[in-house]
Image 1: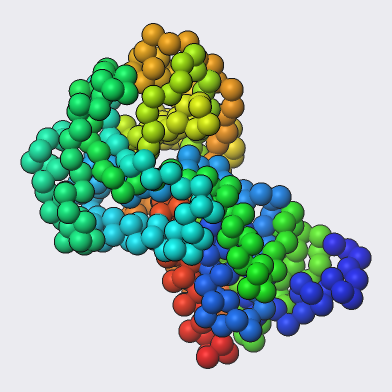
Image 2 (image 1 turned 60 degrees about the vertical axis):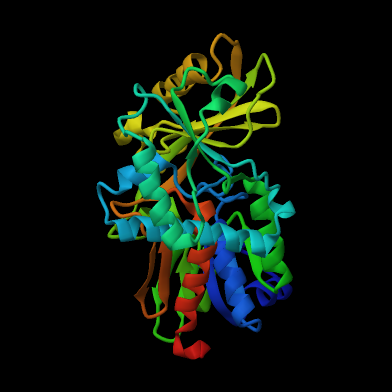
Length: 382
C-alpha cells in the first residue's frame, strides 16, 4: 500500500483505537466483543493471509469439549479443578459461539460426540467406574447429567465392529469452520469494524500514548492499542512466550460405500478424530506419532502420519473397503505445557491472546471476550 489515497487512509488508519493482528476466530471474536461493549471504537484487524493462516479454517469442524480419554490423560498432569473448569469453559465457549452466530450460520449438525476404544490404539482404560467419575465432575461444573454413556450396540449399526466399545455424548456437534469465520467477519464489519487481508505487520513501537505500527510495505500509522491474536505463530513475534506451534494434518477420503455414521469421533485422547463430510470421510490428527517433526509452524503433510491415518481407516474404520485420499491439508495450533490460553498485557499498549491449545472453536469466543475486557481496562477507554 505505498500509494494510499486520502479515502483509504481515512477509512482504515485514521484515529485507530485498536489494531488486532490475526483474523481468525480469536481476532474476530475480540473485535466483535470490543464493538459490542463500546460501539464508537475504531477497530482494525490485519490478517496476513487472504484466509486466516493458522487453524481457524483448517480444522476438522468439531464443536467438542474433550473425549473421556483426553480428560483422563489431562488428570495425570493437572488437578481435577483445572481439568473440569476447562471442560466447562469449552462448553460455555461453544454456547456463546452458537448464541452469537446462530446454528444455521455454523452449519451446525448436532449428531453428538463419540470415543472409540481399542486396547491397541490407546493405553487409557475406560470402564463404567471412570465414566461415573467424569460424569459426576461434569455435572458439578455444567449441570449436565450422565454426560457420557456406553453405547456399544451402535458399533455394529455403523460397521465399526473392529472397536471394542463406544462412549457417546449427545452434546457435541459438527460445524463448517469456513461458515463460522465468514459469519464472524460479517458481524465484525456490520458493527463498524475494518478488516484488511493480505498484509502483515513488520514492526511496532510502544510510545506511551500510542503504538507506532509499520506494515510490511513500510506504511506507518498509529493506534492506541495493539493486540496479537496469532496463536501458533506467536513465537515469530514473541519468542519468550510459552506457546509452541504444532502442525496437525487432515485428510479427506472418498470411499466405495456411503459413510454410515454421523458425529464427532475421537480415538486415543483426541489425537485422532474423524467425521463424515459431504459423503466422504474426514480424518485428522496423529501428531503424537512424531511430536518433534510436528512441532513446527510450517505447513505440510507428514507422510508417516498420513500412512498411519490411512492404515487406521483400512484396519478399523472402513475395513475391507477401497478408498482414496482426495484432499489433504494442515493447520497450525498453539500449545503449551498447560492447557490455558495466554491473555496478557506485555507493555503499556501491547497485548496478546494466544495458546488456544487446539481448542479454538470451543474457547475462541470466550478468549476474545476476555481479551476485549483486558483492553478496555486501559484508562483511555474508560
